[in-house]
Length: 368
Figure (spheres, rainbow, N blue to C red):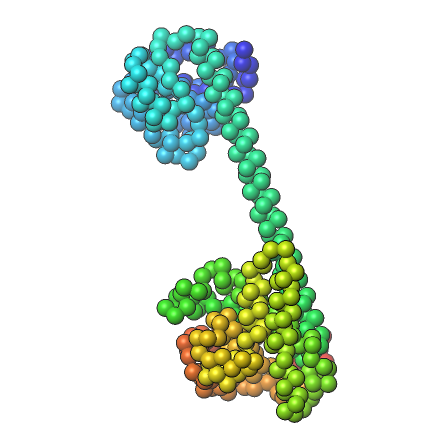
């Protein structure tokens, strides 16, 4: 026989004598709450302790059992409470209707106590099983989200570590990877509704793009120090070697792709950026002299970000350029170095990119 006083049942019937009979039957085993109308039943169901099961009379004046049931299901706080319909109508059609709307069982009056107790116990056990399953699913979902978050953090830390490895070979770059990552993200956000880019720049692509951006110069680890850290202009031969960093970077990323046990989404964009971010819209860039839309969107965005940061930053071979001159150079590069629409959007939100540069500015010489 059931015996769980913490389990709460709500019995709803406009006939007081019926409530008395059910109350006498159920109170030894359960905490019982009662209502003589649909309106009162809804109020009770919405308060603590919420019922674990509702016995609901179908034929009541005013709001009948079917309407009460619909209102219970419409409320997120009560929609999960199982309902057993009670009715004096002993017909197959009535039973089918009750089960069709979502009731878990259907009991006809006059009630038979052992049957009522057995059916209540069965439905409570089913509810407990559903609740345990829901709790387990919620726990599994939280674990999956936690593991995914941990993987995201591990991936980002690994990317930053690799990017900083390239920076150690070229110490003047300072916060270059933080700034360019910020530029890339913001430029992609501002481009996402442009008709030329809306099909590409969805939320997932932009997240992967920003994650990939720090690896754009990873190939510099393969450039000799004498060239990478030379304080003066490079010779033609040195420029030829310097330009190999784009291919070196994409080849290193491609090797990582091949060795990964499964595809890693951001690596595809990282490879594009590393290989082609020095291409120019007019086809005079390197390494492949791609032009126009043949240059991947990711690399075109990176090109604007990279050039902007190079111009505003101090290097061993040059001073930082005044911001108004930088703005003019970006404008002059529209349709030449840069995708014209990307240049327009960059210039339209120029203050945003200047703000990123200020937040991640390099320390003055001699400062940590």
